[in-house]
Length: 413
Image (cartoon, rainbow, N blue to C red):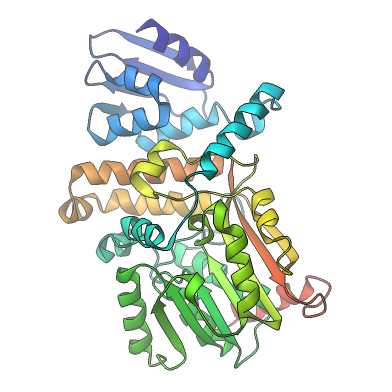
């Protein structure tokens, strides 16, 4: 397929890729690079290149999921990394006027379906988070933190474990909340309860965790009961829009991606209403570094229906006018890449168990998802944002020293 050949030659210049077509023909593109593995991609049916040309990410994903393409010389993560390394975000040219117009049109079109109403929110959450708890136990850390860990260096040369990096992430977030014993904390999108239990255990606060996942709720409540802290750490199946009461602190980790741009103002207004006058909030979310965009077709169809990764500009615009003051912004650039690489290794090591839970097709889907997620933080346009908000400019110290001191104290416990 000559058109596909031409695309490949433009796509891969660093590293080497050989493509074997179903008719027996093959082509090799790129040049050997010691930093990138030499790979081969074998099409097992003639439709694959047409599907990829029609929709590159979804076409490649579905061909991989269906077993219609094979990667030789490495795994799917090596292939996705090779493609993304050749088209790194940093190497992109500035957006032309035509490109900006096109992106603006896409953004307006996305807004038509980004509204995340209550019924849709619960269904979207269930699609991903109500998968078997046994699946997540196979590849996450022991506390089931399904968000980026916190590593001390870009290559984890210190060699800390994923368990330790996730503990350090919780300490990093807790330090930004400036917690005091007895405070009331709301954890929006509490997952399996790890953050809520950590904050109570280390800081002596009472936490209410909320989720829309029935599977997560069962696990979180069981953990609180087992720890004997159910009277201090409570978990509820409720939409954030329906929460009542007041809280000294709000924390939200990995949930903002599911709010939907049409509801950003609703989210921040509600949080402002729930906080005490001296209240502080920390939102941890995956973020775009290239401005507003669109959720790719693979993620929308198979992984996070209704999900959308915000640009910082969208996030800040959503909170402006709500009387919440942005008091600190941190960008975590490579932490999630290291985290997901670890998840990918654990997933590969548990192939037999995962296929027993589901099947080989699901295993291929999951590995493609993790491969794409890891490499988009290594070469693509994704990072993590931690944005701190306060209702009163005098609530927190005016330098960041208190964060470092609190984090060090938590690390020593």
